[in-house]
Length: 351
Image (cartoon, rainbow, N blue to C red):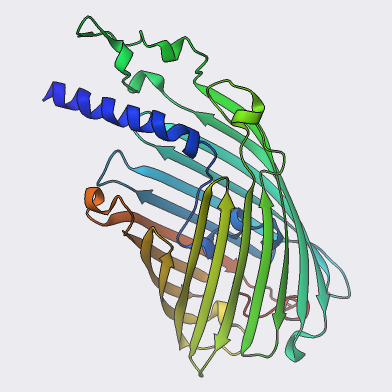
């Protein structure tokens, strides 16, 4: 049993070592990406109807294959300067931590963002919002080498932990770096029943050195991540609304596309204040070449509580028995008692 455990851990270490050149430069992702808008695009900072928005999300995946990969995050954002003409400056804070595998590979990131929203027209007549956002922050990446097994730790057939050349070739336990992100978005409400949002973002613009193993920056710099998203909110009946969305992300050689739709049914409809009415929702999504996903939850009094589940369809399907990731998220939007939001921002925004 002990020998089998050692072999299992050794195999995992080898797999991680082989995959490292491909995986070290990949950022986190969520199935419920609308619950973590500041991770997607800093221009989404402050894009909601209300005084303040706070959210938290938890994700666990690959539990059926190895030690679960766990990601959790929290954010808060709000308008901080509101002008007479409806334009406003918003600020926000995003924190997240990612923990992966036997070696406790962790990535803690804290980001502060600002976005300026330029409003055009009147919301009840089909207004629009153009936003530009900037984000900067700090990240720490660490790993516990003592929990990994390497082939060269076997000396004359005996396992001698800590003797690997990996300890002598510049692999440290942690690295710190800074991040710079930027984005732009455009939202428009063509009527009280239909609105859409389009966004473009660029992350890791400074391409920091995030490698625990010290090499030249050109070999280990964190690659830029580009995002493009489009989403809509369409009230097709008195109580039923459709919320389709497509998210595209590209980083180094990795590409991700998520597409799908959320069906939302109002139980206690409040015209003009859809975010604060009581409703049930369910969504069906597809991540190309990786997973099919389902989301579901409830909205009530400014709260949104949602869960998500990924069914794996990639090459790991056999090993994982189709089990991918599980998420749970909660968000709260505090309403504005003087209702200035309806005058300055876009009702029914998707993100």
